[in-house]
Image (cartoon, rainbow, N blue to C red; front, side, top):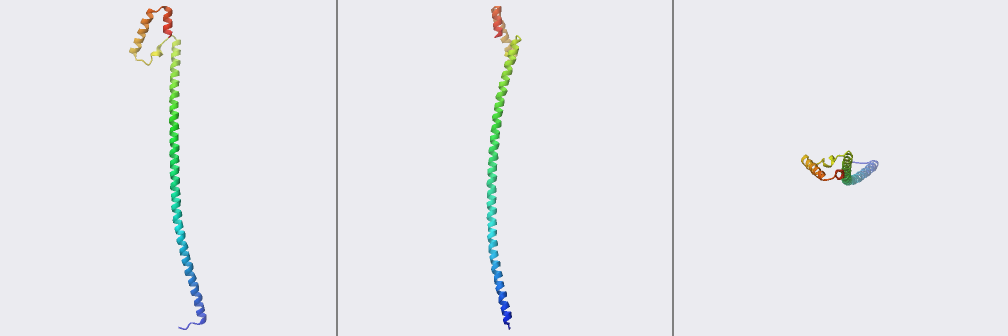
Length: 141
């Protein structure tokens, strides 16, 4: 087959262009492979970072919750103590009010009826042996 010089020259240019295209394709494949590896590496690093942040956040929330529960428990304890103080003060007020009215009832309210009657009988028998002024002092006590 006869090929003219012009055709040979054109074929050389085509061959050169084809070789350049192959080189470019190989280079692109290499770079694409590098980019794909970098993408896989970045994805793994991102996943690890997110896992760490989730763990830190979970730990932080757990600690915050624990602190809140401790604060609530402390507040409840303080409220219970205040409630007890208020109840004791209320009992003292009731006792004082009743004693001003001449009674001794609040002193014995928490006792059952039998104990209350025994105490009253004891006070009555003691009052029988005391003078009028001594009885007043004893009952006021």
